[in-house]
Image: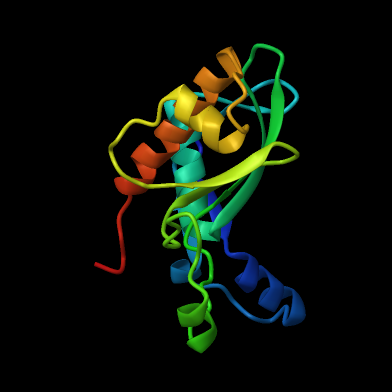
Amino acid sequence: MNKPTVFIVSAKDLFNKRKNPKMSLSLKDIWQIDAIPKSTPDGCFLNNNGTYKWIAESLRAYGSILLAWTDNHGTQYDILFTRNPFLPEGDRVRRCPYQGGIHGYELFVSIMRIGAWGFDCNEIKKYPSYIEEKLAGGRNLGVTGEELAKLINGVIKYVINEPNENK
């Protein structure tokens, strides 16, 4: 069975196409996403390699993605992933640098109503206790913390192995 291929057009290109319906989109404007995420029947994302790769490829195409995720043990979170955010330059930034070691090239993970953190994109494993400290104020999330660690480590694995057009 052939797996389907998903093509994604950037939000900016879609906005411009809506303003000008005669505008055509070339293949260079379209990102191809080959990964297939795993989800529940109602559409919540589940952990697996297809999901991690899909998130990483979606981040490459969009820069951010909001999704409903479940640990498959009764907890559901709305999670915003962000990569390569716009970083303003100039005197204002030099006088007031980012706090907490943020550089701007981390994987930013925001769990709605819980917490947010920028995780370094490297091969160092992020343990559940570290994830819980950064995203949940140190609360022990049990199996949910373990599943979040799998999710974040899995996405980072594909983010650091994705092709980089800036090289």
